[in-house]
Length: 246
Image (cartoon, rainbow, N blue to C red; front, side):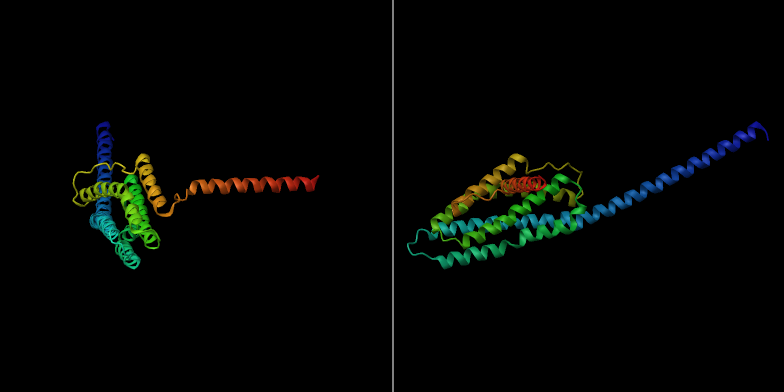
């Protein structure tokens, strides 16, 4: 076989291998694009599109809290106590708004794997927690024996938290709409920073103290206390074991 023929075979083989490789890469790329598109469509239908409506409806909670607070203020001007009416209004408000945190919780439990942004996922979890807490606080108010003026102060004290949550919803809903409309992708900026979280917790604590006279339980302090007690118990057991050995 001549050198030219051998070179021709090598070149032909090389071209064939290159074509096969490029074809394989092209097929892999198309397959990845197909999978990515399917995942994007699933995320839109299962996460972002529902969120656009869930987050908008969640604002109804704030409107109902404001309406309840206004009603309490007006009723406080009446000399006659109407505890039954307050109880009914608070219960009705809590029942009406219970859907929103529950809908968000269900979505996060079953569909969170479709959320790529960890910052967006974190904010949704924090928002769900605060919405659920608001429902609990309304129920707590319905069982309170405080006068109407005090209850009005209690709900007024929650206003800074409601404002923060409304701002968070605005940001999260805008992001969900961008994803749903397939607009150019943008990086999500976390809303509930450490500073924001501290402000929200402080507001909750003040409102709870207005109603109950006590601060909200600090679970981290409770757990630290339990750890200390456990440590003392372990030390005591160790001492007794050493005494027995001695």
